[in-house]
Length: 338
Image (tube, rainbow, N blue to C red; front, side, top):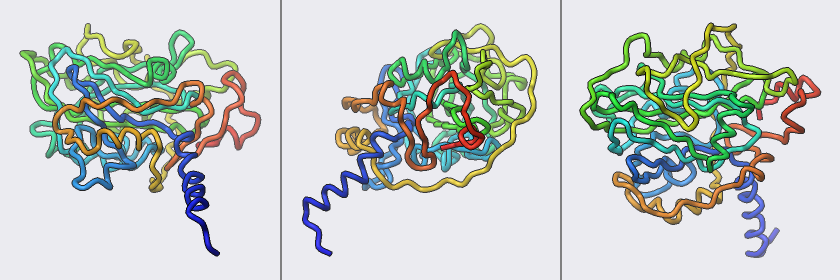
């Protein structure tokens, strides 16, 4: 069968268009010390020549990690390996994680952790790292942290502890999506920092945790239950008592461990399409080396209203939720992790 060029173009649009509407998000840029750096762009960066050096470690696509016991939980699949660039930030300064977009039904906590690279971050394997919490927020004042992130233009702001000892660190930002009852979805991203300043403080042993490990005894809530009222972000209290961090500050550490949730394992499915939002960003910035800050304009972002119906590409496919206050009618809907 012969196809005209117009027909082929229409088919191409048909395959690509859903990705723009149905995408999850990921950290596509960061503001560090007032300078903007591109994140790792999974749908374009692998195909550049040469492959750009980013401060954010690689991730395969915009899908989740589903196994809370997997080593991928630390920095996403492939994120244990170093990235090629490092950003400089003063202790006490802010880091803004700018997510490409985020579906408004993918509600859950947001957290930021850091770990020392014990030397050069471009040579540091994060597999056995010990992390300390910078900030985290769960469900407070009737709103999820992920919703706060959406309301803030898909951005989450964390503050490097002002007294932190100078050195090289990974900083990890994560959203946990709880829209699929019984199967939390984890979206971690790690960036490489050189922290400057005269601080001398390092986290104590009791403030350090392993990732995976932080979610081993967590009972994740059914957010569609009419009786759902509150949820504190899991994990330890923020390190360095008295420091304040995060877009909305940190929740207190949970007072006690709850029953361990069943860990669901998953393999990562590959995703090869290019979202139109990332393509727009790529067209202006991916040919600029990001070992230095980028200054290009950010792409237009999906509105919170349109993302309420967003599904996902790659490792997760979603469907619309009928409402945030109604329990799912069927067991299948409640177990749905798309």
